Image (cartoon, rainbow, N blue to C red; front, side, top):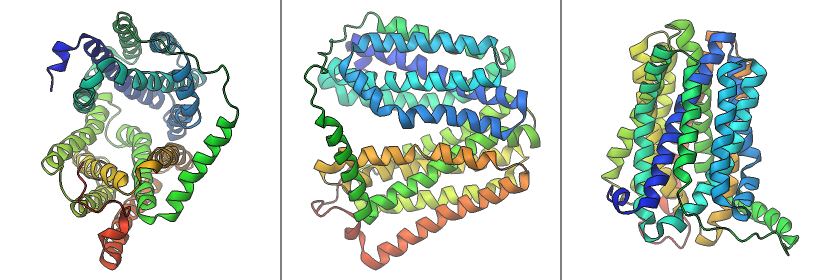
Amino acid sequence: MWAILKRNRTYRYLWLGMTTSRAGDILFDLAILFTAYQQYHSARVIAGIVVAQALPWMLLSPASGFIADRRNRKAILIGMDILRAVFVVLLAFHQSLVIMYAVCFVLETASTTYSSARSAVMPELVGSDLPEAVSVSQVTLQWLNVLTPFISGVLLVAIGLRWPFLLDAATFLISAALTWPIAIPTVTPLCAGLDLSDARDGHDSWYAGVQFLLTHSWPLFLVLFALGYYFSNSLLNIMTVVIVGETITASPLLYAIIVGAQAVGTYLAALAIQKILHCSREQRTKIILAGGAIGGMALLFLPFAAGTFILMFIAWLIYGAGEGGREISSNASFAAAIPQKMRGRVYGVANGLLNISPLLAAVLSSTIGSTAQWRDIYYVDGAILIIMSGLAWCWIKTFGYRSMYFEEDTTSLTI
């Protein structure tokens, strides 16, 4: 699998840039949350940062794809890296609340455009090596998610909360430098003669995706199930830094280790599921439901773990394992439940719904002040995931597995 890095020089540059940039992103996310907590000791402030990071992905993703299809993609990749580097440097020297929110919003706005452009150029640059390139990218991201939080925690303790922002800016500049020698094909602008009916087509496509979900219970359930998990994930990210700071110690290293435990759990679940990648849809459904139940039980355990480092680590590890099992199997089952001609529209609607989760979590967290209220939220969120798993199991027992999938899927699909 890794041989592509040796034989494909273009992908090697892309991979190095992606790896460097992603490591910087994880470092930034930890640094900004802990900086906000140390200065303001407020869940509302942290919730505001989450909102500032989520809004661009929710509102501007369609526009970023439009830009990536109609402008010089190499210029976009390099320009967005430089723009992000400039704003991160600003945050290293000015850490007022307004600056934090503005920088987070600009960074994520640039990231939406960068992500669309990078996704668009990948197939053109690697050609027939695309499956191998995607596999290498996914494995690399998994390892970054596992290792980088721990390394970031050590850096935050060793060099303070200003230098991580400068390091993140350096990663963007390195990514831009690695992109420079890549020969990326230019895109012929499509603006000339653009049919204004495209807007109507886009509206109709969105409506068709919504209509499909509302009339097909199993795909809708998977989206709602994922929405519950995304919501709990966002809520955990907002409050964990507060709980760690108030009940254990205000140490970025301990916070990073606890957060990294979730990535470790997800990675271990992914390794286990790889052994049954070609399982039947019935087995995949069981994994989804088990993942939901495991995640729910971890959330129920978290209120008792708050204040004890090792227990919080275990709770996050278990939650990550449940999330890994649910997400990997859910993705395959979701695809199997949708006819090929409808997948693009349904996925578009589903992704838009999932991006609502961070906003809902931020609104809720901004109204919560005491630890007792946080405990109640964990109980409710955990109970929701367990109940949804139970309801899905009752559905299976009543109507059977076939009722969950699109009629054309007459065989046991594989991932």
